[in-house]
Amino acid sequence: LPFWVVIPAAGVGARMAADRPKQYLEVAGRCLIEYTLDCFLTHPDLRGLVVCLAADDPYWPQLPCAKDPRIQRAAGGAERADSVLSGLQRLRGLGAAEQDWVLVHDAARPNLAHSDLQRLLQQLAEDPVGGLLAVPVRDTLKRAGADGRVLDTPDRSCFWQAFTPQMFRLGPLQQALSAALAAGVRITDEASALEWTGQSPRLVEGRADNLKITRPEDLQWFAALHGQ
Ligand code: CTP
Ligand code: MG
Image (cartoon, rainbow, N blue to C red; front, side):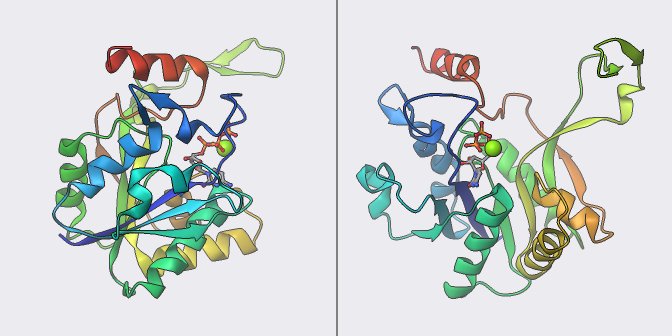
């Protein structure tokens, strides 16, 4: 199944609080974003890939993959959704069509397994909307008030954690993101933009270790995986 990829990589990594954006932190001699890109660049059905970068990003040009002809750059924006929209616009310029499948995947999510990517592509190939990798919530959930005291314990069986890649068709995804942004709706993933337009993305159960690197302890976990 042919597909395009957009990698939003224009964040500053405020919660990581490192000396550079977290996608450029090194583990075993390679930056996080290089691990992230591997899974897509080794897939035979990849049509093209766009990385969305901060305007003054001095790190990307130094990476070997910056010279890969399958990777193009787009300007990142103020919020993740702005970066993704910019990447989608760039795909148009590369010849991507209205109904082509696009996978959006966080630069800071370096542990995507090939089996998860395959399952997502296979399960959504004929889907009218698209969907995302997700994992059923494992722990008991508590709803709490501002005072930090428990209000109640919701039934966790209907709760999932939303991961990436998120897979939608180019035109509908562009329209949903633009409309949601124009309306001032807070969008933290692609699926929520589609939901806002009344559509119902499909959840594809993935591996629990497809984690986003957000805080220092997440980086320690990923480094330990690579023997560091
Ligand atoms: N991202 C982006 N453009 C933005 C904000 C985020 O492309 N304006 C990207 C990040 O680079 C990251 C992904 O979206 O790969 C997920 O966002 P997040 O984990 O929140 O990364 P940061 O925004 O960099 O981190 P923080 O929120 O802690 O500052
Ligand atoms: Mg952020």
